[in-house]
Length: 153
Image (cartoon, rainbow, N blue to C red):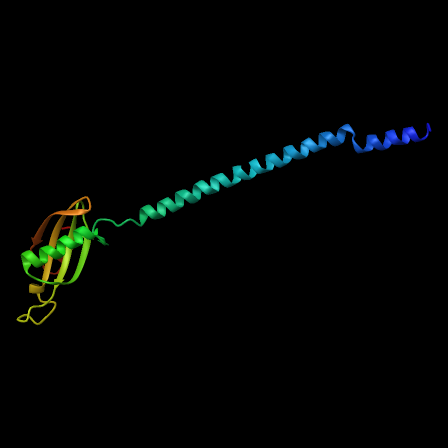
C-alpha cells in the first residue's frame, strides 16, 4: 500500500498546486484590466462624437436674415393684423429672423381692380417684435425697391 499512497499524493498535487491558484487570479486580473482598457479607449471617442454632434447642431441654427417658421401665436397674430388693419387676405407669407424681431414678407390676394399678383399694391412688409412666443408689436414697413428689399434692414 505504500506504493499507492505516493501516487495519490502526486495526483492530488498536480490538480491543486499553488501555481495553478496564482494563475487563476492573474487571469481574473487581466480580464478586469482589459475591460478598463476598453473604457479608456472608448471614452475619448464618445466625447469627440458628442462634441461633433453639438457643433453640427449649433452651426445649423438659423442666423440673422434666414427664413424661419415662427411660433403659431406669432403667425396667427400676423394673419389677424392683415385682416383687421390692412383688410387683405394673405396668399403667401415668409418670416425672417432678425435681432429681436421678425421681418415678414407678405404677398396678398390681388383685388379685382389690380390684376397682377406681383403688383406693389399686393406686397407688404411687416416688422413683428417678439415677446417670447407671442407678437408684441406689429408695424407695416414701407415697401423698398429692388436690392433694398432685404430682410432685417
